[in-house]
Image 1: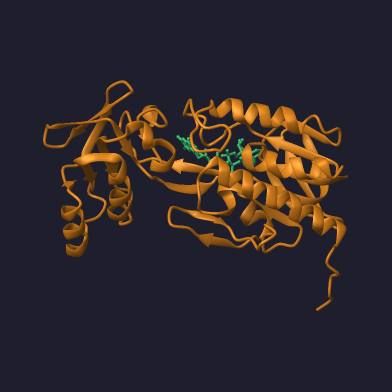
Image 2 (image 1 turned 180 degrees about the vertical axis):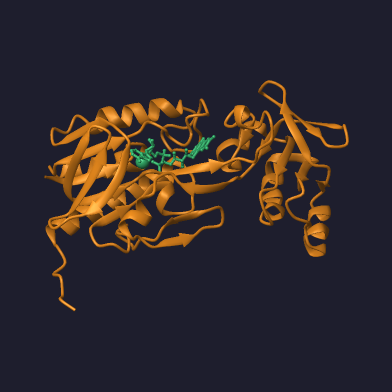
Length: 304
Ligand code: FAD
Ligand code: MG
């Protein structure tokens, strides 16, 4: 019986483990090795590691965390989680593990539209967030591929990193901006393209979009901002409530990052709408501390 099992050993899960290891708690980290940013070479915006390889930040974090003797790591995919008398049991392909507390740091999966060539360019010339990737495309020709009505708002944000008059919103048949949005887009010199995108081509840096009427749009970068889904089915299995985020659902948590199921904590992209390494690390740190405090000060169960 471990004190804590952490499912997901990327930025958020490792940050939680760091706090628990420093408090000498026994922790088992189970990780399937599919970081959300594994498609990108470099990571930006994480103070102290700006521009470092995304894989290096994770690997160095893991190395530091595993120096604490009470922390163990297993490369494994958890398929099932369930509450038991003394805590929780999780199942992997190779067996079962139990702990008093569970931390879900399993991240989200980006659901890219089914356009040929798009997925291969994810993280190279197709991006999710201008704060992470806008600076490097500074003042270039930028595109926004609509995934829903929020794309008008996203375009106005992304245009901050584009050249004047060089940002295009590809509505791609997904929605039509309101007259007010069209006026606002025009005022910001953002073009609206209504021909659908049939393919993405070209080698990074840069990307070309093949349009349904035969034209080709040449861009320095495309922001797709896809819908997301939780990477693992533990909310259903454990009965955790979710919040409906702007791009997809995430675990509802309190200030200490405890979900609506006592003893189950959640952090990182799976537990808040932000999508950045710094936010995942901060969230994981909070979850680690919150989980530790719940072990020190267990809530007294009140019979109903
Ligand atoms: P993740 O890093 O996604 O890790 C979740 C972990 O949980 C994975 O290792 C996964 O395998 C594991 N897992 C899931 N299910 C299971 C299971 N059933 N059993 C075991 N393990 C499981 N942010 C920045 O700050 N700067 C950037 O430059 C940047 N670039 C990005 C580029 C791209 C293309 C993308 C998509 C995102 C980028 N991000 C960037 C955002 C960043 O990747 C995420 O915010 C961050 O990875 C979230 O960390 P996390 O620990 O919450 O989840
Ligand atoms: Mg994690």
